[in-house]
Length: 129
Image (cartoon, helix red, strand yellow):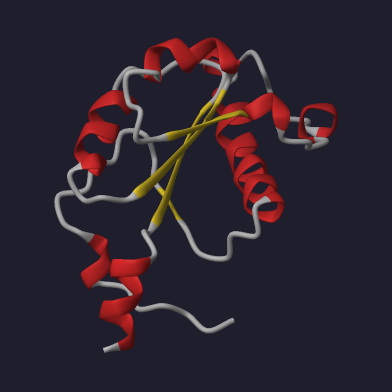
């Protein structure tokens, strides 16, 4: 009973991250996620906000507002595929900073090209931490 009540009161946090290059398929992902009433958080660069502003139900976070030392410390090749490995790795640091700054203990991070076709709340139960 607790787990059912939990999900009706608190929405599940789904975090998407798009840095470096805007990936237009994130828009399809967001449209699909909105069908399930999730709390959708998109961490991205401010220059991409205009692509996402039409979705008033999502929370947009400027990735530059999250303080990480990742850019200074990474040794990954920033030239390969327009910074592919740099941006892939950076998102984990951005998610961590966002969660830490907002006291979030539970969330699901999806790749931008992974679309859900089922409501995850029936598959997960709340964790006691």
